Image (cartoon, rainbow, N blue to C red; front, top):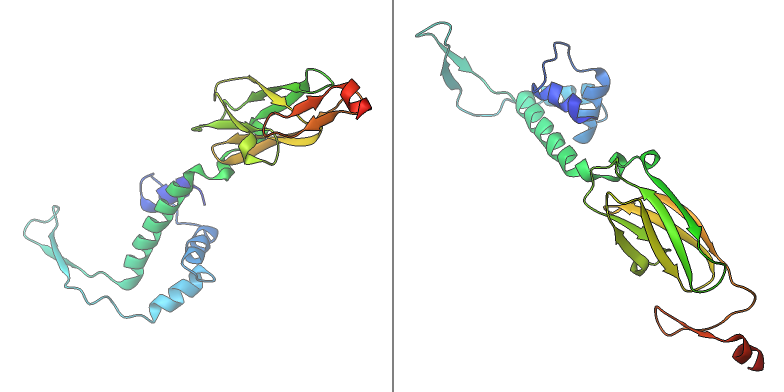
Length: 207
């Protein structure tokens, strides 16, 4: 359900028609009912809330007082709408608002040896976001923050293989791209942390 629909229900936007059955059913589902009909049926069994009727003065007829009786369905409908509005505002940063089609994410390798610099071309300018990252592979530690208005970023890959690079907006993966890091023949690597030590061809052959 969109925020514009809730605004119409809440009266924030002028709308002369009644809510559709689908909208009413969605609101009822949020409260755990199968449909709006079930919601109405259940509320029809409930007694009015035992509150003292409020008295207000009608401006159109001075001195005439009207009594307002608040009943259960009205109160629940108001509470329901409030909960849904708050829920959607909290979800306002949900992954669903980051349409992957609005982002671009490609790459090119600089060499065919190690270490290899990979140039990523990206564009996340279509999003209203707080941050953007490029993650080299599955490892969250291999994540680098990039400018939201940037277009290009270079990452260094120290090991060969296939890697699924990811473009992340806030905490949502919007695009990914397979990076294939090659070597010129066999390559001896000593893992020492983030940056490994490469064994020279002579040392590798002589063992």
